[in-house]
Image (tube, rainbow, N blue to C red; front, top):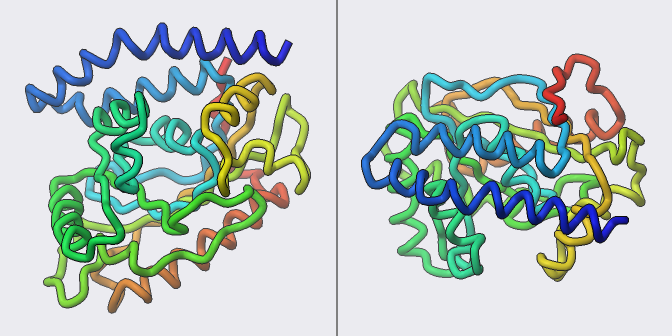
Length: 271
């Protein structure tokens, strides 16, 4: 039955996704405002196809550019976070060469960064700042990797250079950062324990295709998300101070969500 469910979910996903890709490409070519917002609608439908129930506490500031600093658990995070708000992602350079995944990432205006090349990191930092100043919402997975879903890996401060370059001029009051804590806590409506959460997580040297097939066959999931209040990037002296603040906030929120302290979270269920 799990294989049947995985097959049906994947078939529905590709049947829904492939016809819409040229439409998003058209939005990008014409500079339409829908190039930002259409992926948000699309990923909400993908959550329904997969069976992901979203429970969101807080909201992304829509009227300004926002750097969203998040923990990273699974490849599902892309769809889940994109369903919460119109966002783009800071992705490692390798993603730009992955079959099919790279097309989706480029259509969502992701920023690809080669972390081994310092000069490129500087160039990408300028690109990200320009995007934030234009009002975009950019997601940074600050751990630089994914975890097993039971906690938060220490944040890598060099990644914050893209948002808080050393010696840069003040960015202005219209650019802020918000933390985001993401957890997957239930399968078929039943709470996952410490041993169960790594089944959802994609980390280490796991193969993406086999993990996706296995996970999509399990059944509906509940994702709990907590979004922190907006804080101005200019309020932080440097990237290390920003990283310390974000890591402490995300760790606290993840721990509370895993303990079930989510009574104020509003549900956005997938049928």
